Amino acid sequence: MSTITDPKPMRRGREDRSPLASLALHSSLLVAVFIALFPVVWVLLSSLKEKAYIQRSEIKLIDHPTLDNYRNVLTETSFPTWFLNSVIVAAFTMVIGIAMSATCGYALSRFNFAGKRGLMWVFLITQMFPVAILIVPIYTIMAKLGLIDTKASLIIAYCTVAVPFCARMLRGYFDTIPRELDEAAALDGLGPFGTFYRVILPLARPGLAVTAFYTFLTARGEVAYAIAFMQSDSHQTLGSGLQQFVPRFNPQWDLLTAGAVLIMLPAAVVFFFAQKHTVAGLTAGGTKG
Image (cartoon, rainbow, N blue to C red):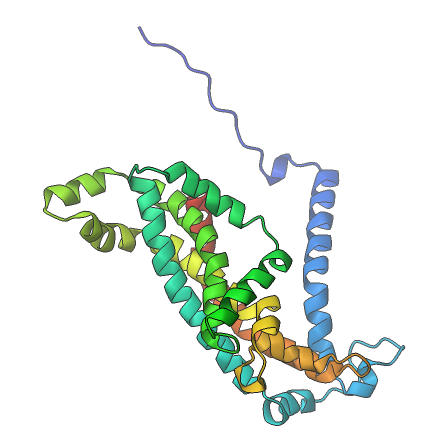
């Protein structure tokens, strides 16, 4: 005897939306886009002005455009050195952080061991401490190890921030991968590490891409640790180096805005091409764990 099931409710489309609802929706989207893009556009337009026109009380979007600010930043300051230092620190932080986070996240996803729940709580609690509290003890540790004014100090400090977050995120992503694959790999003679390296990691590329992207950008744009740990100009990163453009009595807005645009463009280009994989990794990793 067949049973009659209720049909699934139809999803409302654009044609079912009232004109007032459509107007409210599009107005909200336009306001959100304006709020998000206004600071970026303002900095971009300011970077094309001379210093005297940036500081004028009269507001003009385009006023005597010039590329001299970019030339001065690239040729008359240590910006290229700061940029290279930031890339090196961010790259090592990304590689080391993802290697530690991936193995830790896989262990949390697949194995039961003593202290597993406690470790998860430790990862969560460490993310609750603000940098202002952590910077003093971490600085003391780095000073005793003789790592002040070295890139290693920043890499270690950034890993302490990135690993807990990325491990929790990758653990959620590994939970979405069927455990039957681990069992099939074990039947083929692979051990836990072989299964992780040959079977799980290739399937976890979207999750790894998201965490790598997050770790790289976070380490590249961090300011507090960079200012505290880096003392010589040749070792400074972008976060600490750009502070020189904003002295107390004579801020150099022309150099600062040009430097901000130069920092922003590479990240924007990478995100533009990686946004599809980034969104997919975020949604897949957020379904469990």
